[in-house]
Length: 142
Image 1 (cartoon, rainbow, N blue to C red):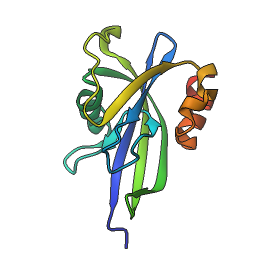
Image 2 (cartoon, rainbow, N blue to C red; image 1 turned 45 degrees about the horizontal axis):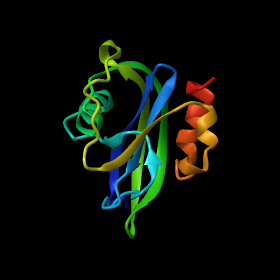
Image 3 (cartoon, rainbow, N blue to C red; image 1 turned 90 degrees about the vertical axis):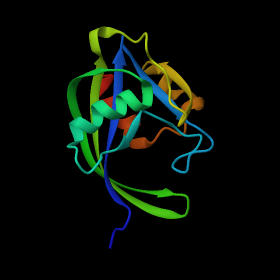
Image 4 (tube, rainbow, N blue to C red; image 1 turned 120 degrees about the vertical axis):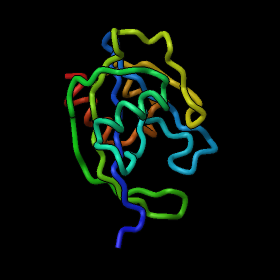
C-alpha cells in the first residue's frame, strides 16, 4: 500500500546559538533547491539514532553529540512524481567537542547557512518545511 515508505532522520545542529541549514542541490531528486536541515534515510540494519550519527558524517562530515530527540512524525511528500511516506525522527545535536573545523557539505547540498531565530523570517529560507520551522521556533529557539 505504501511502496515508498522509510524511516528518516533530521539533524538540527546547534552551535554557538545558531542552527545549521543546508540547501539541497539542484540535481537532487528529492527537494531540489530547498532549504532544510541535514537529513537522510535510516538503513535497514540501523535504529534511528545510529542513522543520525552516520548521516551527520555523510552529509556534513561532522561527529556530533546527541542532545535531545525533538520530534517523531509522519510525513507524506513527493520525490519527482512519486509519493513518499516517512516516519521522521528529528534530533537536536551539537558538534562533538564543539569542533566544526571539519564541516563540509556532501554533493547533495549547494549551500549552508548558520541562522538565528530572527533569520528564520528571511525570505531566502521560505522553502524551509513548515514542520522544521515550527520545531525550531518551539523547541530550539525558545
